[in-house]
Length: 502
Image 1 (cartoon, one colour):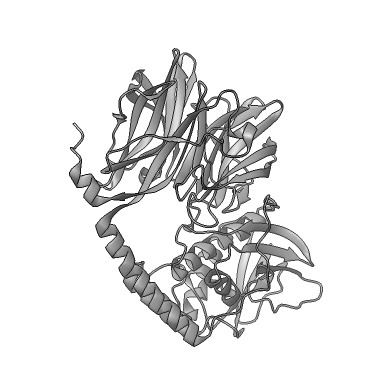
Image 2 (spheres, rainbow, N blue to C red):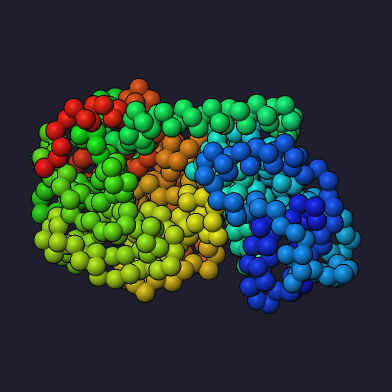
């Protein structure tokens, strides 16, 4: 299959080279480039903003937005555009009779300037690939770096490449309709040079404020909320309980997040990410719970040289197992408890050489399934959902042929165990449109097998009066106790007044 990539020859970026390389790896695909001036690209003032953000935020200089000479595309260039079977149009100006054309747009507008304008307007754009007005594939793009235009731009370029490559593999995907009004209004225009200059000044001022803030506070700082369900959990209520939530206390020098309870031998034990601020990494700790709350405080049960979080614990074959997030090690590993709640020994590496976040396992349709968001070719950690299946939770795990099965910053990333209600499989998801872990969604898995996955987002819960954290991040329940987590503020001066943990 002969594929031509239409791009602006005056604005060649590392993104284009990455996309060409990934397309060329597909078989049987022959890639060429149609590189001509397109006009209407990102203005020089936006480039200046990128340079300032690179300096003040310490961003790498070799990201996907990096400008490259046209010669960098030499392996894919042709003197005259080949007679392609398919044109992938990144500029929105291809008009060829009798040739298939995939037009790539962001909220309906083509080109990198349209994408940046949406980012600067605070949108979470939908990238869409269309052929003759029919959607081939689409994804709701996102970033964990809201407020930093360059980092957001590069994350969304990376996921655009993921979407195009997946579409080439024959996978049609759409984003779920969300149970709240979509962002409305006309497509934003690129800000003027004056406005971009003002934004650059604000970016610098914001960075100064952030530095001062980090001198005064341990940030980010998360907290765990808990309550007795009395027979009705959030999957039933679809709203915060009127009684609110109690908070698992910490000493200010650390925070607890990613709560995973398990009912084992009649006792609820809560596993958490235990992040120590002075170390800049987390371990896994555990604490027993009674009806009135924690019995003691979380104590370390798994400490490795790299950051650990999301301690997905479950019981099977008379043993307790854990799959903690270890994307810092580029693995997904399975552990078994030999002296519950501790004594964890590694039993298997389920996935390797992968940056996979929040691995979540479930049995369905005679198979085990592993859900995780993958930082595919760079980009955000939270918007590309990949699946694997296996006959047993120990593996071997086979990647889904349609990965990523979903590109959606509002509902891709797992947020806790999946549960069954009657015939429905319900999945907690992170809604990261506003920021990482900002809101909690509940999605119904309408279809899951080797042919694909479809879900319907039925509820989105946000912080508020009954949960006054600034974020709402995950959800789990065991033994009549339910747990959530979100962010808080921990002044450093309060930490210094408290005795250290022993």
